[in-house]
Image 1 (tube, helix red, strand yellow):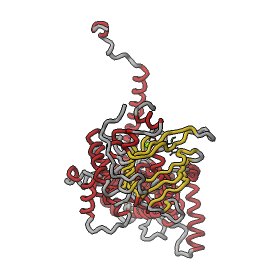
Image 2 (cartoon, protein in one colour):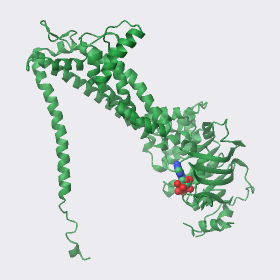
Image 3 (cartoon, protein in one colour):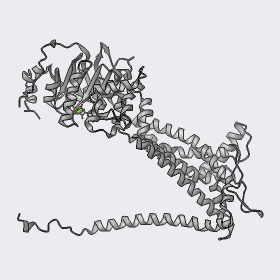
Image 4 (spheres, chains in turn green, orange):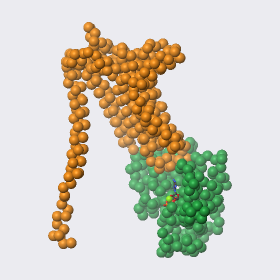
Length: 276
Length: 305
Ligand SMILES: Nc1ncnc2c1ncn2[C@@H]1O[C@H](COP(=O)(O)OP(=O)(O)OP(=O)(O)O)[C@@H](O)[C@H]1O
Ligand SMILES: [Mg+2]
């Protein structure tokens, strides 16, 4: 199956993005198991980068290494460098909490806090001690950017758990926006949503791209084609020395090129549906 | 398959094993109810005899408890004050330390540490209370309070009893609230961390509120154990029924009185014998009230979200 959805032309994109966030020879281990091997990848500023590839190839693992969410997993370890504005985020003097404030994350399953809609948004600014003149305005702004304001403006004090799945996911995006990060990482943000909610979130990504650098993991190739400026294709390959399956980067380029003119046979097989 | 051939295939078949199991559960459920009603009746019936002779107001608000004296007096307040003091002192130690231990174990400790400490905690919760009682009277009261701290206190005090009772219920509160905290999905911890919250903020503002009903259940259980605890208070708080006005004073709690009276030689059916049930009924009602209040607090907190 060849994807015929309108692929963003990307005519204005430079050949190599300016890497605001960048991986250099990144390996990620769980204990002694190397889940991701030697990934080098620049994520362009104010671009949407899609990470695609078969299940288990380490997309989520790599994504979590970009804002040190792996620190929360026992036994997880990152080798190589991940730089943000030129600084190694795994550097000795770097505070993981500050990293996560600059590089936010939206998860596969919506995970609103069991608090009111308002408090879900206000939580991030509060814990970060952000100087906010009017929290109400900030909440409205975040919800508006996440295309949720009109649906919830009359029930800000109600529990976030009462929202639908799609609304919850947009709330989680709004919550992330409220701390004003520079980068937003999204791990299959639409996989639990219906096509209408998905379309809303995709529209949202177009909007957000003007202000944020976005990295999105997705299994939906039409979605990658629709939203991403650049696409990185990963696959799981058997490591010659250990015999383990490990995730490697196969090909990275402008989305149009990856989908219309892949350079690697494995990429072509995958996007044309010939691969698992 | 034709309709005639199909006919009858949806009809129920007898399932004897399931019927037997259902019967078994019905009997178990009924037994619980019957036993509970029995206990209440056993308390209420003798109490009726008691309140026929002693006015309820005199019982509840009288300040002198001397059921065995010639000029008998049945004001239960002295016993209630002793119970209140020991319970409050116990909770003062047990709630912060128990919750602190739970947070440490669930949110901070390495999983290897947790795997060792959790069972230790559960074993601690099973130490016989008479052991704690002797510890309270011999070590805390005699050595720590009197010798080391040189406090003005006799052989017994509600402080020693309350403190040791607190130590006794720490494992219970810690263990149950640790379960409640651990049951909060990791997705919430990750969501909070991804917004730049540190561990303490995540724990206090997200995990704790999410686990609040389990934590309140743990505290209620702690309160119930403290109110109902007998051995420690009988040994360490003393057996003298008097209004307790300070932590260094001695006093007889409701449970200590019941234990003392039940071991005595009161004639069955006498007024002296019935006092036991009146105090027991009051204890029962207090515990029940604590439970109801706590449950309704939890409901109110949870209804919001
Ligand atoms: N917490 C963990 N502990 C140990 N191994 C893990 C952990 N998370 C992932 N792995 C392993 O790392 C490899 C990559 O997993 P990852 O979840 O990153 O894949 P993925 O590409 O995101 O897959 P999917 O598309 O199914 O989400 C897998 O072999 C997985 O079993
Ligand atoms: Mg994944």
